[in-house]
Image (cartoon, rainbow, N blue to C red; front, side):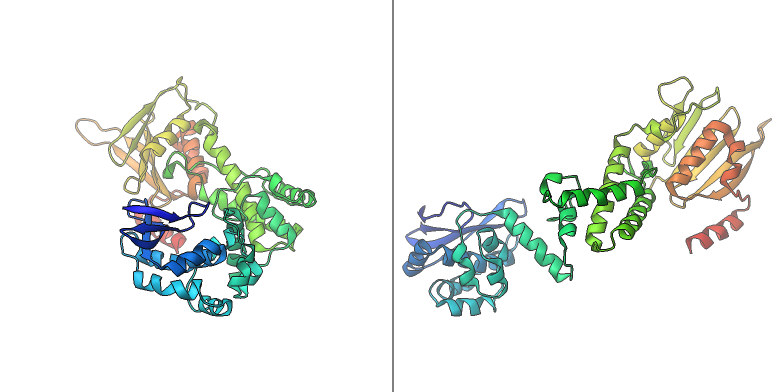
Length: 411
């Protein structure tokens, strides 16, 4: 039987309950293996309860001091009740100077105290009791997030200027640099917004004409990593040149925004955008992979040959399926793409098989420069067959010579 003896307005501040006649502090912290919140309790006395009722600051300090013990319990361990009980009197009943000294020796959680209104300047100077004079029952999670972001940057020696901060707020990256960036002009000080927009204009001009293409080798929604890197380099160079006062984090967030927007445009565009031309051919093309799957494209259909092929790749490519072939049976030629090695082979029929004899083929190999190279190669073959691939070489007929060229490139 559990009865609530004392609780505050915020649902997360620890409650005092009576369980089988015993007073216990009850708090939720962490999660179990199923990601459900864990609840911990430990005993306390009437004198401790009296302070908890009367003094919000001491109540919050106790919570902050006990949370590391809950963290130590993990997803299934037991709370160290002896250690928790040992914190009661030093946190709740000791003079402020002794509490401050205690908090210089033990681990504790800052986030809860900051979200409940603690003075961050006093907190950083180790005056925890004085810092909690401004405490409130109602938490402000954003305040704690901003404080954590400032501390994280300070630990790395990063000092943001007003424009740096404004740019990070504009891209929604001030609190969490790993979040997907988006334009949030309403989060910027209106006095700084024109300057922010000048920096953004510099970035937009730098990446005008650049695009981030799809990379079907990594799935339907993947984009080309090299295109991303190329756009990042262009934006970073232009912004650093025009605004040398910006810190590295502010410059990175602008490049991240430009690349994310370009990648979204690529993901939302139909695969046909890779090449909108119909091939100048009448016959079908056969697409196969290394697992035996096959698909046939025929002229006159709703999709271009290149779009159909790259969709086939996006559906089938995997770490154990990285060889794809396009074959034109009527012309007796084809190309084979080796995604695992950034290489390709063009295959032409030298002599048809007759009287039970196997056909004779000429196979030549070439190195390929990433996804853009593959895209150009496929487009050229689709529109002109093996005869159109000469400029995408050199094509090397000797396997040993080709392997040496590949090793030199990879080195």
